Length: 141
Figure 1 (cartoon, helix red, strand yellow):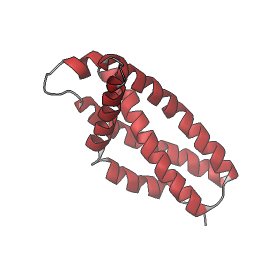
Figure 2 (tube, helix red, strand yellow):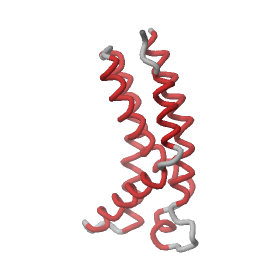
Figure 3 (cartoon, rainbow, N blue to C red):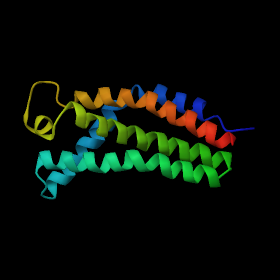
Figure 4 (cartoon, rainbow, N blue to C red):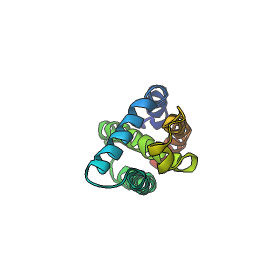
């Protein structure tokens, strides 16, 4: 029996619809950590966006490489959970760079600071489903 990537990702998406605030807090914590070590606030967001763009692009390639060499279904299930969570966060942060700036997130108090991170997290959910469909096709070969 083949592993059902889409079913597992749909379950993650159901949870992912309700957790964007938590992952946004994680990203804010990263920004605060970078600021604590001496990186200016808006520059720390730029650094986060560089890291997440690289992660967002590399993680699927690494997962596909591992998918081709790994046929253990339990291992695939665990790895897909980690993939979905990390890719969700990477997409959330990366897409936010199109909708806001580090200066806005750090210095503007318009009542919506960080709200972009919630919306971009929701945008990540269909992207994760597309990846799972691709993984399904690749695992069937």
